[in-house]
Length: 435
Image (cartoon, rainbow, N blue to C red; front, side, top):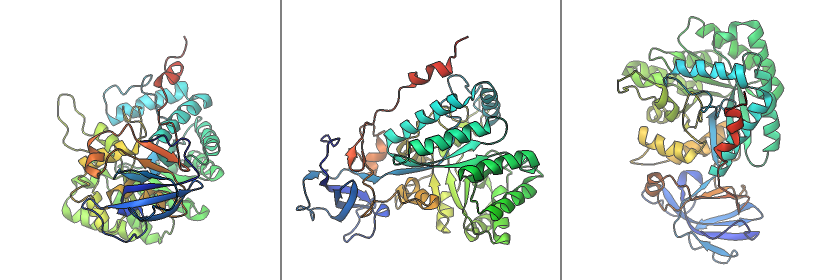
């Protein structure tokens, strides 16, 4: 690829391959993987025109991509940037969910100063930016004395990263904690002060129904969206059905995103059908976090895992439920790996959840669909939109999914950025503080 860091104000990316699901209607047939061959004219940092390949020969200097894959800016709708990149000082002792909960709680109490959160948060954003992400929603632990610091850092980062990564936040608290007046008041105050969403992580508990009702009450009163962790760790969980039935009964009109929903994979056909019909009726969207859940679920010493942490994306999509995949955690006790790279997330999700044969509109799961749910004009290649694009050496989705794609070119406003991720050594002093 030629160096586009000093690209002219107007030029054409010729003969690009673009997923048809990520563009407006374009004349001409899609290829076997759902790709279309396009010329993309860029002008003044925006997409000026799209046309079938070879049709924009007179629209300015031309760079022939020779069929390389082009995607719009990517959208990561479920992350945890407040706890990211603490693995070196807070490893998960056994790889289990309980091990993760305990390790994070201890690390939070010992280390989560405002400066500590700020540096790790910014590190995570620089990783995502280098990989081509233009929008992120992060959950923030919002229970206890460190909660306000995390929200202050989020507010700072939202401003300092404006124009590079759009940021949204969700206040996260256990569903049992919602019933504690003081803890719930803190959550609600932080969410309203910073323009966030109400969230909770649900599990099998007698408090589930009354806790969800209290969240709905607050969301309706203050016009807030809901973004919940649902049925992540317990095969017997029925939180998704409870959530959907309540949304239908209350005729709730705000946006609801349900994350994880892993228990659906082990339900019988009758319960699956009943629950997913309710989810569709309620207008709930679902995001799967396959890499994190693969890491945590069904861990037992000396035993190969059976339950593999993915929800029923195909069955949901068939009912018109918006479905997505996202990064979730990165190098913390809930997921030891990851780098906020949505290409990696989609590549693994495609293999885990069979998002192929056909590929269909699979790439929308990390672009158009989460952008629509977040209310953003991102995740699409459309005339008038910002020229925030990723160009890959791959010429097909098969080639794209077969290699890690470290040599992608990322355009922001039509110009290439440095795609070198930050060095882990930057955080060494936080991971090994002086005695």
